[in-house]
Every structure is written in C-alpha cells, then in structure tokens.
Amino acid sequence: MSKQVKIGVVGTSWWTDSMYMPALTKHPDADVRAIVGRNLDHVREFAEQWRVPNVYASLEELLVNESIDAVIISSPNKHHYAMAMKAIEHGLHVLCEKPLAMN
Image (cartoon, rainbow, N blue to C red; front, top):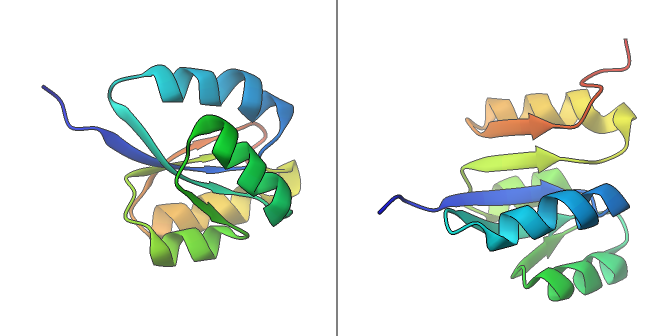
C-alpha cells in the first residue's frame, strides 16, 4: 500500500473544477488537503463541493498552515512563476498550468 500524497490546489477555475478535482478526489493515493482562492466565500463552496477540509486566501497561508507534499497551481497566468518558486523553495512538488512565466 502506498502513502497518500497530500496536495494543495491553488485556483478554483472551471478547469480545476472539471479536470483536476474529479481525478484527484477519486484517486486512492491523493489527499487534497486545501484549496486556495481570492474569494473565500467561493473557495468555501468549492471546497465543500469537493470535500476538501481547508481553505486559504493565499498560497503563503497554505504553506504556513498545512503539511503537504505537492501543490497544483491553476491560478491566473501572471501568478504562476512566483507561486511555483515559492512552493519549490518550500520543498514541494509542483504541477503548474501553462505558461510557467509570462516571458
């Protein structure tokens, strides 16, 4: 039996909702621990829909409060590079939507 990978997801877009969350929540080795988004009311609804226990308004809050193994960055493109680098600096595995940077 393998250890579950604890995951934080940044972004609540339609892509996250239709592509990432169905696959992650059905996979026996994935444990989505937190969702990050700007509008906390929406993030709470999103998390409730997918049965994710924790919500945060920023990646920084997630990094301080959660013990995770990986982060999926599905936020607006202009934030990808800074978020990916911050997660990497914290020793996390990163899956980042394209583009990784704006230039």
